[in-house]
Image (cartoon, one colour):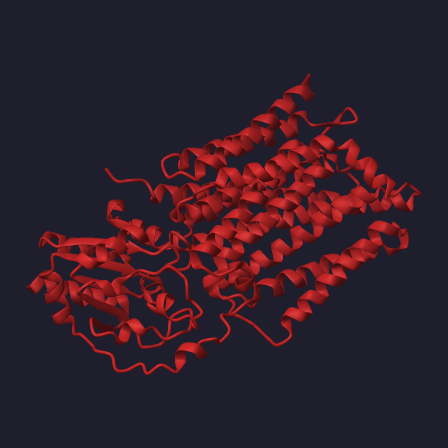
Length: 468
Length: 102
């Protein structure tokens, strides 16, 4: 009877995961979808604790289990609630790593159990061994990689690349596969400690997998690691013949893979390019162009031209986030609107450090959601726009993506800011942006540079406009 | 080899679930607006926290003298809970910010 209720719990869990994910892909239903999936998860967890049976024996150690649940809930809630909105992607990576580690630990305990049985002369089930190894390797790689991604996004680790790193990684991976295959096929009881060698090698592989990849590509990597952890969870499901772990794990594994591919498409870079690491100095094609001189514009001139414009478009970028200038930006927007200027924001899908980064940043500053225009919509508006204010965005407004086949960003859809009447670009210096390439927009006749930290520049602009 | 084939036939329903779930995952994501990529990634992250069920089983089965299973199981449940709770709370926070005003 109780097993039947458990089966229903798992069924409910699986269905809520499917529905929840579906609802998460539409803006109106997204929040409810998250809650539904959470409810299903809760039901599955409680059902397991109280109703799970193996050979007629229910689970024990309730005190340990509930203590761990409480500790995890308290820590998780505090961490998730207190962190700044702009630190969201690194939290996703951190929690992803926790999941991967959980899967790996399950494999370690189950291997230990299996090992004891083998030592006592029991038969070796290759299928079970294979599942345990898969869960260990995938979970560990995901854990190690996610921790590096977390550290990179909060600035603790810099990019680290060296010659031959890809060969080294391939070699490590080959060794992992060979050792695992040997253990699985031979079932050699004396070779049990090789399992722990595979564990250590997987950690190293995971670390070096993510270490050379640039910070701007982290969201893609996190999405990929996300699907890895899903697959590791699915292997746990195989191990325990558990349908809800299987459904949840595989759903995330496949949905996560699709999401990774979608994110790569938005950047117009193949996944292989992202994983191999840095952009690779192929700016050889565009570097030889005669860049020409750039113009500068002053604060007072900028203030005047924006106040008397009919339509202004703000293009936020990573520089705005770094300067934490989103609140001053909103002030500027309100000030201009009071003067009768129509102000909107053009949001490029990969502006910032993650998709939706700019939306989150501006939402934190209470910017009206209706003013945020998606790229296609914004591009239609640029020809009628008087002034474009580019705040710390670079590659997303680089025309080379349309005109220069030699450019690393060629083919990436960009914002056509040069179609407007005047482009004011705010940057701290002439240093290249994340892609490390020159931006010919800066040298075009309609463009002017407004140098300075985004926050201080915006504050000065606000002060200046108030005097007009 | 034999054991693997017999394992496959024993678990054929599980295999069907896997195959169908792969296609389901692909279908369900469909056309997602890029602004939802990050919350979706976060939600999926929380869902794969279902791995905690395996950790609970490990902890629940651990005999009182098996220190390895007890400690690693305890740690695994904490980590799994962090994934689940942290994941759903973070996703909710992200989606709260996308609420339309008025």
